[in-house]
Image (cartoon, rainbow over all chains, first blue to last red; front, side, top):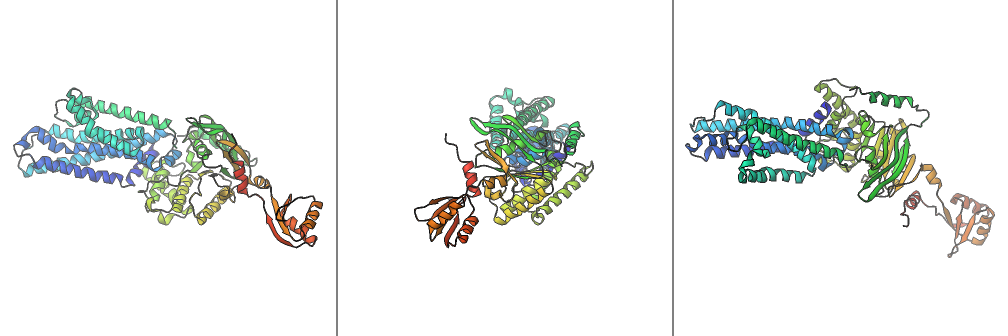
Length: 244
Length: 333
C-alpha cells in the first residue's frame, strides 16, 4: 500500500484544496482566539473554563480536517479521476486505506498547526493582559496531544463519509450540518448522551471541562469506533458499487 | 510481493507463442450487464488477437462503454466473464503495466497540473523492477516514467500547467500519457476521437498504428465507423447490447452492394451491351440506366469499347457508413 499512499499524498499536495482549507482554518482560529482573548474582562478571563475556551480554539480544526478527508475521495468522483485511480489499483479497499492514512497524516498536521496557533496566540494575549495561566501543565499537554489525535480521526471520518456519500456537495453539507447543528442540538437538548456524539466523544480527547464529557480513554475509543464503522461502510460500498 | 500468480502470468505470456497468434489478449465470454430493467450488455462473446487494432463499434447506447468498463473491473458483470490476458483484470499483477485505458476525455482535476496527475498515477503504479525501496528512489523512478510518456505524447512543455487550461486535444493526449505510464501491451480507448480536430484525429491514428506495429493490441470504441475506418484491422459491431458482427474490416468493405447509374446517348444500345456482359440493367424514368454487379470502371470500359459516349457515370455503391447503419438499425419489434 506504500505506492498508493505516496500517490495519495502527492494528490493532496498538488491542488490548492488543502491550502485553502488551511487558510480558512487559520483565519477561523485567529478570530476565535482574538474574540475569546479580548471580549471577556480580566476577571472573567481568570476562570478555568474561559481560559480553556481561549487556548483550545485550535480544536475547531476538526471540521477542516474532516473536509480534507471528504475532499480526498469526493473530488475523485466529481472530476472522474476515480476511473484512472481504480484502473491503476483495482483493489479499491487499498485505495481507500491509502486515503485514510494520508488523511490521518494531513489531519494530524492541521491539528498541530491549529493547537500551536491557539496556544501561542492565546498565551500571548494572557501575557499582554497580565493574566496568570490557570490551566495546569497536564491540561495544556492534553491540548497539544489530543488536538492532533482528534483532527487526524476527523480526517479519516471524512474519508468514510465521502466514500459513503460520494457526491461532494452532499457530503460537505452533511458534514457541516451534523457538526455545527445536529451534534450541537443533541448535546444541548440531551446532555445525558452529549458525551457520546462524535463531537462529544472528541471533546474527551482535549480535556473539555463540560459536564457531559467522557473520560479521555472512553471518548477516544468511542471516536475510534465511529471512525472504523464509517470507513468500513465506505470501503464496502465503494468496493461493491459500479464506477460508471 | 512475489505472488505465485505473478509467475504464472509471466509464463502465460511467454509460453503462448506469438507465432500462433492465437492468444486472446481480451476475451469476453457471454458477458452481460443489467442496470435495473435495462440489459445494457447482453450475452456478448468476442476476443482480440495480439498486434491488431480492433474497432468496437455501435450507436450511442449500444453498450460499448459498459463493456469496456467491465473489462477493467470498473463495472461488475451481471453474468459471464471479462478476461484480459486470460485473467480477470483485478487478478492481474500490476494491471496498469499490462493494460492502458483512456475512458473519458475529462478525467482530470482541473486544478492539478498534467505532470502531477501523471505523477500520482505513476506512484500508485509502483516501481516494478525499476527503483529501490526508499521513497526518494520511488519518486525518481516515477518522475522518469512521467517524463518519458510526456515526451511520447508531445506534452512536455505544458506539463506543469494546470489541466483546467488545457485544450481538448491536450487533455486527450494527457489521458493517453496516463494510459501509457506502465508501458502496456494493450490499449483500451473509449471514443477517443470525440471532439478532436482533424489534426488530432490524424495524430491519434498514426500513434495507434505505430503502437500496433510493435506487436501490441488496441481496442478502440466509436459510434462512427468512418472515424476509425483508417485505423482498424478488425471490427466488432454491437447494437442494443448484442453482438451484430465481428470481422476484418476488409470483409465488411466487400459487402458493399453497389450499383452504378449511367446517363448516355443511346441508352438502349448500352443496355444491350451491358446485358451481354451479364450485368443486370434497369431503365430508370429519366432515361438513365441503373447497373448492378460491376464497378463503375467496368461499366465505363464496356461503354468505351462499344463507342458510346457517356454523359454521366455515378457510383451509387453504399458507403461503409451505410453498411454500418444498416447493421445497427433497430430490429423491428
